[in-house]
Length: 233
Length: 314
Ligand SMILES: Nc1ncnc2c1ncn2[C@@H]1O[C@H](COP(=O)(O)OP(=O)(O)OP(=O)(O)O)[C@@H](O)[C@H]1O
Ligand SMILES: [Mg+2]
Image (cartoon, chains in turn blue, yellow):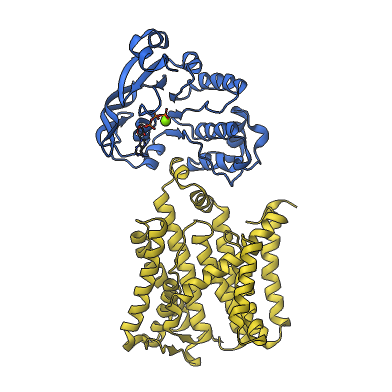
């Protein structure tokens, strides 16, 4: 079953074609990596999926329903979660409260689910710390915990491993594989090692258009992709 | 003691102290404190929007005046007794804040600030325009005979003190409850990072609208009580000065703290009172003290208390 699909999705920023005519289908339960060079339009594309950006053209469907005109918070309520590329946490609130805000919105059990989400990303010992006092890598993990705590059907992660240490990246890979039982995952990722280890399929975006799509080995072997991206990466 | 117990002890302790002071204070300070409690209630309303939701209003005098005139005009022209008149004042504030919020929240940041200023100015001009009913700048007195609530004469100092205390206690406990519940915690989240709150699935507009309505209605309740307890309604309460005052009180007392509005109103009241007894240039003294506070206690008194001693302060 297709959980998310787009047809003819496009975004212009005053003449600049950031995303152009993208048809995209994501089956339920899949881990999909979205890769592409800097400025390829990845963040812009997922911004239109979760409602942060209004498309210039095209449609988005989620779970069989057209959500093109829904505001962001309603899309999130349908079961999407989004982690920002540029870390966005509640800096002056505790880690507990950051995650609790995610749990409370869907009327979950704050007392049990908040510590569980923090433990899962390896921040169990920092529950009472202020989010703004965490290292950059730990703030990224906190955002992932906020994503998990929403129990999403579709989890969109925008470069989650940026700023993580090697051991944290290993833990992240395990977490993603573990999560795929519960959620469909759309992962924007520059680290090819993470992509190869986690993704079921890979979509390559270049100059706002889909350049290729396939399994990780297929993508690795694709010459157009090599020219556009892997060669330079 | 748990944090929750400390929070209850502090706020109920303050209320108990205010009850005790009624029996202890000399007449002059007794009268002052009654006035301060009503003004602090106004500041509590302001703080819900500014301190907890992060929306800076420069027009809250319109809500204070809406409550005052909703109460006062219904006494003057409709012959209302105090209880329904107070309700009329509060209802006026509720209706105004709902309409205002629905329109003004389409803007954000500086534009929102300017819209609040313009709405309040329009409110002031409306009071002047309908001078036939409101008596404009001059205002009107609410007679002693019109200020008897359930047989209690509100012109008597003790009755007035307890009426002011009842309002203040209700506003303090209401704001404490709001902030400890999910709705209030979401307001704080919106203040801290609106985009993130939205991307957690919160309806930011609806929450801000709720905050405007709550804030405007509490401010109106304070305005209604002020008019009733001190027996006068006038257009000066709708001027920009009365929009700036709650901002000042909240900044000094500690924006985003429950007791901050009371501390700020008390401090400012006595600062002006004492300075004006010492010199004709008392506003200069006030200015210097305010400057010192903003330099050395930038989070206000309540904010500094939270940062230095009481980390649990809500
Ligand atoms: N708000 C904006 N206004 C104008 N141009 C924008 C805006 N956001 C993105 N762009 C431009 O759109 C293009 C696509 O940007 P986008 O952030 O989607 O790329 P990306 O694939 O996420 O890149 P990166 O890997 O660096 O994160 C870039 O040229 C960028 O400069
Ligand atoms: Mg990006």
